[in-house]
Length: 171
Image (cartoon, rainbow, N blue to C red; front, side, top):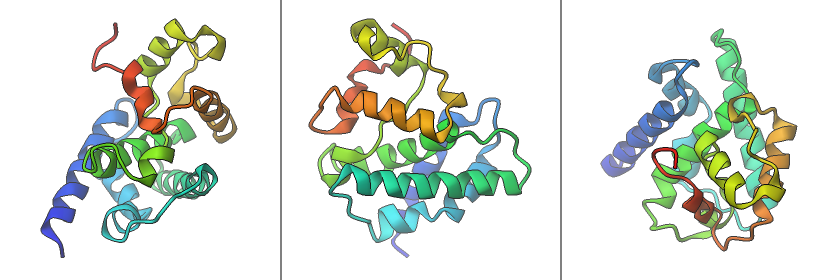
């Protein structure tokens, strides 16, 4: 066991859990779901390579559905695509994007964490996207990917760069 990888995984689990657990579930359940979906194995221990948006999107769909099925299996109500997508994006942001200083192939294609702060600030500067009233916790798979397609029209070299619109507090 690589101690650093375990440390990195534990911190990524914690950050992901803190980002989504309000009115949803606890850290223990989120960690169990992340472990069930094998995020550590697929992203830290033996990283999958994503060179195309479509490859990442396919991984995202499979992993999101694995997470939602896990939550349903332990009787967690309302495990929406928006919530599990944020678990994945925060995990990737913490475990890979920040670790790698925002470089690397996954940093080009991985979806950014979607929340009200990001969407509100994006709407202020990009009203044509019409994302200001989007409720990220209620997004289904189809709506989520329609939103991702809108965000991709901003054409950042690395998708995480869209977080220039995100701050820890509302502006």
